Length: 482
Image 1 (cartoon, helix red, strand yellow):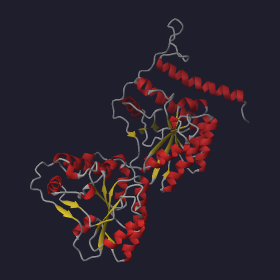
Image 2 (cartoon, helix red, strand yellow):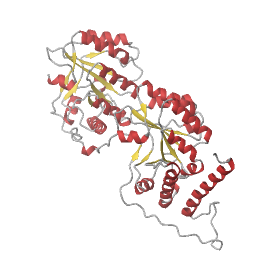
Image 3 (tube, one colour):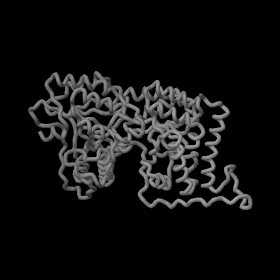
Image 4 (cartoon, helix red, strand yellow):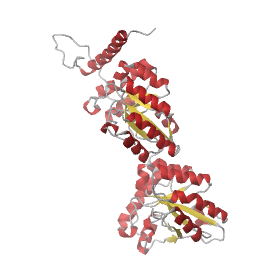
């Protein structure tokens, strides 16, 4: 038998007051916001929380994984109408999400929180009152997290393992308190469509579509902008278009891996600044001298998840292994995509950090760029990249060749087949014709993984055409050995 609305309301108020009193004891204030006069009441002593001295909790802006998975997360807890609409949209689009809920709101309307769980979503801790953590003492931060955990567990049975503040910002004290309470991490995000700026659904969806990534964490709010509701369908479509799946944060973390620090990865220092370059020996490798009908397919630069994943899917479908020369500034922003290349059986190599014309740099500038790129790529893929370097634009001279060789790249990877596919004026048919007419035994084919060009359209046609001519594909390092 359902309780009357009056009884339900009184119960909610009671629960809310209990939580507010707990926080009032912590802050030394009355539940009405003012200081109590000593003559009116004697407050019980507040338990002093000793600052945690162990290791700070890890921060999770994204999860390290090459799997085609990411998480859609929500902050706050809107009213019953808005929350029901959000949950219905998630159901309609087959998305399991993660909700960071404020403990106070859970105490006020526990049925909403229970409905979130019943529909298969995660519940995590959004602090008790969504206060600005930078303005609180360690004791207050600890209690904000602890009381929220207790309320959520009491009302739903779910035990939060992750904490996120209202803004996603955090302090060392937040990390310490989270570790003190045994939580698994402080979660931020790497995809923030900024729905709180009252963007419309299309703008929110377009933002996610542009920045979607493996292991990504999308952050939206439930209690600010109603356009979040229709944006869910657009976000779901963006993931579906590249074969990605939304999973709850706890599952994403469970399926992910831990990245070792750079210094623990063998080969991280294989590329070093070396000012003694004057007599360094190098070789410009344009193709392999072989009678075998083998060729190397190579891709330069960097692109979005959508573009690169499509290339990887086409290569997998045709059982072709390639060599990717990576612009490391892009890798730095999306290391999971580089790792996906390696897990797909491909080689990755250095294409500089900032994509300069190498002949325009001083020897010092060039070597520093190459070392930085090597380290970024190494840390991203968690292993040493193939020791090949390809100069951006293909421009190199004798002095530059020596400078490059001195840091550790004795083979400078050039190419003999190029179709200028980086220029979107060149259609797919132009790219295919260029490849088919120029490729011969031992050829190194240059293509690009840039967005908004026609390489993806041309690639499967060119692969089939070369196979019909009897060519097989090997990675460039293997072709050179041949």
